Length: 370
Image (cartoon, rainbow, N blue to C red; front, side):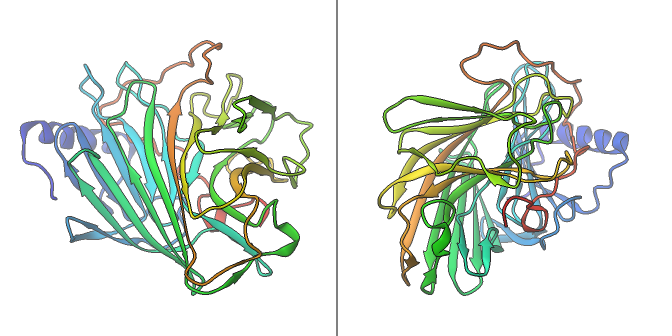
């Protein structure tokens, strides 16, 4: 579906051109795929920080171009502004939602959701698949849906599907379903079975120090409904797993990376909550595990947290299919809301905040326990 010709779409187009000119950005490599005056979707061919190749991207079955990133801009209720709400890195399955503010702005990007299963073999961690196609579906109950087709060589086929409902002020929700189908028998790393052998989806973030972080608290709900918290500090061991063994959760539970006030690094970037909605084909226990890398550079994704299949088979058989469905929510402060609201940014029509680029995203930039 191509650009709308409505008057409101023209207003958005003028706004993005103005903002891009003010930032010195060239739009020659970007294409506005969709614009209905409330939601605009832009395909970006070569944004900074994404090293994986651009992916052929289709809307309504029609090729729109090859892009590395899809950016969604949503109108803020009561404001004449369309800030960036979600960046989906279709080149590597990373999903980076942020949240809108009532003044018409949105917060910077921060913690990412890695929208793929990953697994460890004798050759190491197979973290990010090669994405071969992206499809965009517009309208209907989902409003906007994307589906990525990807492969881990000849081992497995991966599908990553996202739905994007209209965001609320200070809360952007994204539905995520990750599918994995083995195309050959896959022998997992026996030494890491039950701890770090099969990941059903991950969060990728940054904790450089107690003063520079995108997340400094991990919180999760166990199968009995008790909520647990791990506070990261300068004393947290690096180049090490966060736990001696994964912390068990169950369908209906959640895990989240929270960002408390106190970080000097993009202080208003979002906290990220992941609710585990359903699992299909996954038998036995699942749990939360993580890794804090040695690097203390704030531009590196040093913190990884993932849902580990604790009872994964030693060898994933040919034809085995697994699916995990999540609800991801980006918001400004930890819940329950016991902390003061974070400061809001300035209002800019259709804000294109790429000041951070797309930090060390994807396989090339992944520094956590490879």
